[in-house]
Image 1 (spheres, one colour):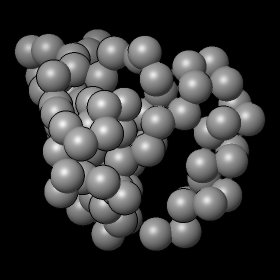
Image 2 (tube, one colour):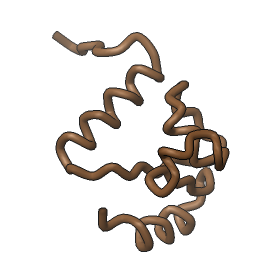
Image 3 (spheres, helix red, strand yellow):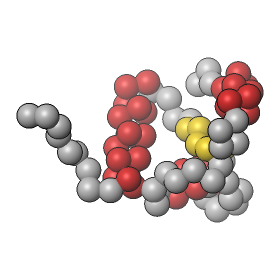
Image 4 (tube, helix red, strand yellow):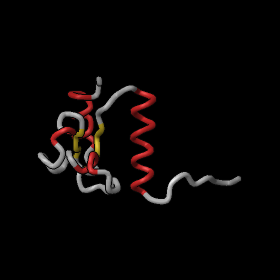
Length: 81
């Protein structure tokens, strides 16, 4: 086989990636890019829209799209758990 497709959409791929990452690392936090497309999973969007999902506050963070410094800052502050 040259390739295998596990999902039908970007949303399914995002949910699967988040689930696998959490299962392997035991961590709950997620960092996304502002204005990036992450599918329809509300957990990904909650960092960009505070108050949208109060249960995700403190575990969903948003860095600037194409802004490595913002990602580095967020990871240095919250990347240990």
